[in-house]
Image (cartoon, rainbow, N blue to C red; front, top):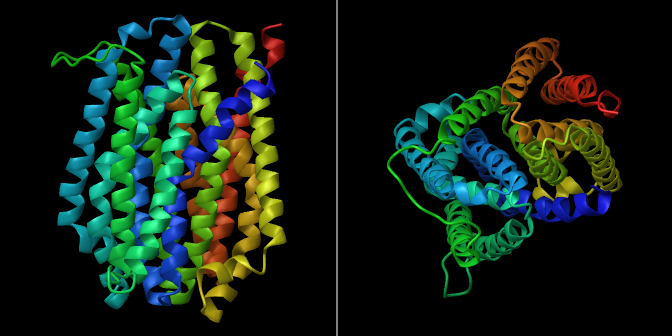
Length: 436
């Protein structure tokens, strides 16, 4: 497996992976020019929505790991029932999450320290956006199927189409269009994302059926792979709960510092997440290839692909960091007109930049371990990184009055621990010398 073959999977995966954060960035940029309260409210509202997506969309990695393994064994004709049942699982947990979170919406946002007008904006945005959750989860599940077949191009085209559609709808529904379309403000941004997500889902379903990748069938008796799927999902869910504990605490503390700080944090976090999904393209390639090599029982190939993937991920992180550094004084102005918000953002943006290559190392190896089904190890790494890295660092620097800097220093410590723990594990268990 050479770099050309890796890039053939990684580049489309980058485009596919940034669809959700691109929607969030678009919402942030457009809403930011309506006002600071609106920007902060959408930041809190989208934070909860994305938290749920990241927690529950771990099914994508579980599906991809199983499908890619069967692809490596050349037995994909045996998993049609598994694929259908896994997609139904995604839809069901999505609708259950809607029912629970809508009932507790105000309470959930109060945990973020949201109140007054900010709380109202967050709730207005979320109560529309959340209805896209089941379709988002099912779409990501389908992307996992495509990835298992070593095909990331279809997900790329679907995501690119959805992202462009979201941008067009954002302008139309937020600001309105002459006398034809009224201006819906914050709710318009939520509707734009929901419509785009719905269309992406139906296009993905159409592709799965049209291309006849595998014989699809449904059975009320659980497929033999469902147990492994649920176990892997459970471990990845716990892992992601730990991850989102860090995101939640970051947003909660930023909100407590004042509206200009949660607005600045929203900008920084959306850039961070966009970068993360961008870098994650190589993790996606590693996930698919490692699963296939596992099915082929090619240990030496796993060692070689892991090293190549994390090197490329670090380079992408360095490239993003250089890009952000070059535009350091301009990024804040893209998202807000408020001088206080821009100043707060620029004071912490350097921490986002420094973290990029570290994130690259972490995400690259994370994808390899997902493809190998090492969900329990990834779970334990995140638990330790969150509760022995992020939380103590946040509490310490907040105590000494570092404000928003405390949040982003904690994220830097958190990602550094993740990255070097994964590197240690990979070098110990999958170094090329172990198989030569």
